[in-house]
Image (cartoon, rainbow, N blue to C red; front, side, top):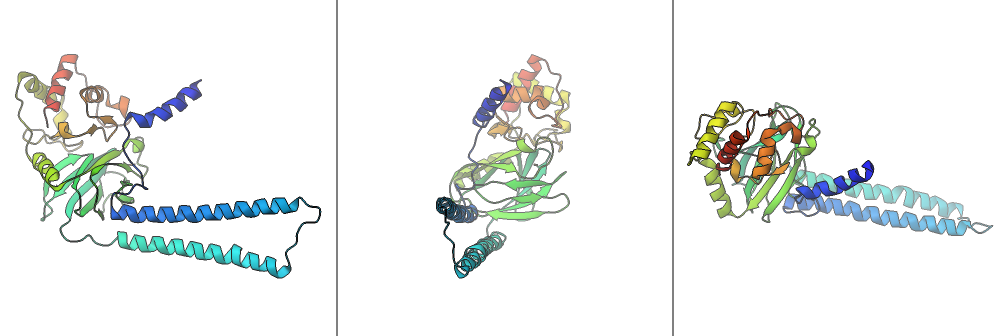
Length: 330
Ligand code: CUA
C-alpha cells in the first residue's frame, strides 16, 4: 500500500506548484536552436527505429520457412558497408556538425544594449543582482529574475559555495556556476511569460529544490518593477508591522538578511527588501502566501532539510506580527 501512496504522491507532487519547464517549447532564439537539434535527433532516431523494426520483422517472417532466403555475398557485403557503416557515420557526423555549429552561435557575444545581471548560486537559492554600465549593483533580489522581452540579457554566473548550473529550458541551455570564476551566457526572450529554471548540477541535499523563476514582461512593466526593487523598503505603517519589525531584529534575522532602508544588512541569506513582491519563497519550493511563509519561518528544515535558516522560537503572536511585517515589504 505504501507503494501506491508513494506513486500517488509522485503524481500529485508536480501539480502542487508546477510551472512550465520544457526544452521543446522555446521562448527565445537560443532555446529554439536547442529544440531544433532535439527534434532533429528525435526524427532521425525514429526513422532508424522504424527501419530496424521493419528489417527485424522481415527477417523473422522470412526465417519461418525451412529454406531461408540467402543474400549473395556481394549483396550482404554492400548491406553491411552501406547500412552498417556509411549511413550511421553520415547521420552521426551531421548531428555532431549541427550541434557544434549551434554551440558556436550560442557562445557568441550578445549584441549591444544587453541588460547585465549577475547571478550567484548558493546552497540552495539564487542571488540576483542587476548591474549598471559601470558594473555597479542597482538592485538585488532572489530566486526571481525579471527581464524585458526582446532585449538581450547578459548573465554573469558565479557561485558562493559549490558548483551549480543555471538552466531555464525555455530560454537557454545549461551554464555552470563555478566557485572562483565568472561564466557568462546570454539570451533574449521573445515572448512574455513566466518560465521555471532549475539548478542542473548536483549541489547537495536540496539540489532538486533549487528552482527559480524568469518573468519576461513588457519594457514598461519591467521598468516599473525595477524601479520598485531599487527603492528602499517601506517603513512600518501600523502597530502590527512595527511589532513585526521588532520581532525581526530581536530574533536576529538581520544577521543573515538584508532589508534596505533598515539596519538589516546580513548577506548569508536572500535579500528580503521587496519579499512580498515575489511569487514564491524558498527557491520556488512554495507559493509566497502567508501560510507558506509562516510554515517556512516556523520550521525551514521541515520544508528543506539542510537549509541554513535556523528554527525560530516564536510564539503565535510574534509570528503573526513578523508575517505582517514581511508581507508589507512590497
Ligand atoms: Cu545548486 Cu544543484
